[in-house]
Length: 255
Length: 82
Image (cartoon, rainbow over all chains, first blue to last red; front, side, top):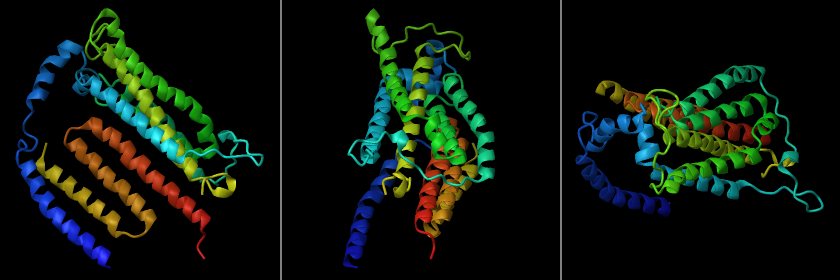
């Protein structure tokens, strides 16, 4: 009881400090929703001519702030590594030999026909939507990050509708590992390409094309695609680790 | 952008978020969490941030509640009601 009371006092004390600070901090913000900051106005003026993209968000993410996005890519990379190291464990055969993960037995859960049927309708639609979002990231709303998450979500429909085995067969973790690493490597490779000409890291060296066309934006389109592959593979890997964790113990799961 | 719409969506998000805490049944909590996320998706759309809304649609409305649903299903299968 006293612990609860102490934590309440602690909350009250910190709320008394943090509350006014938050109000003070927010009082300096521009009026809600009616002004475009200087930086945004500047980007809107130059991005279309300079980088030939019609989605200015993509221009910021993959060009003007492209180096920050490289950092973000590696934050996701580190997060997946952390999840995998915490959750992945090696199943062992009676002799002590590690069991290949694909051989770990899993109980067959009875799937509802309605869920399976709905999944088979939704999967292709969601997958196409995700790929569309990735490919058109530099043209319209969306992009590698958003589309990649949608693609990974579409793959998750396989788990819900078709069960664990098919989900595992359609998204082999070894392939996802390669996809994630290759995407992160591709981002650096595209960024390093201009160094060969003595130009700065992530400088555009590809033809810009016509704004609004699929083939436009130079390096932005390729960095965007790399981010899409990386995020899709990364999220699918995270889903793998958690779903693995949920398999019942008598069939090889953790708990 | 209409401030009224934004205010309504903020209220909806707050109501759904409160409901997640007040409802004590885990299955209902998972579904309400999805509803809460969906109201945030609509809020992001109203604030003209379709990029963020798209990503949040999958993470908040699909993936996150699904993880809870799978966990609840597994817990129930392991400990059948007496």
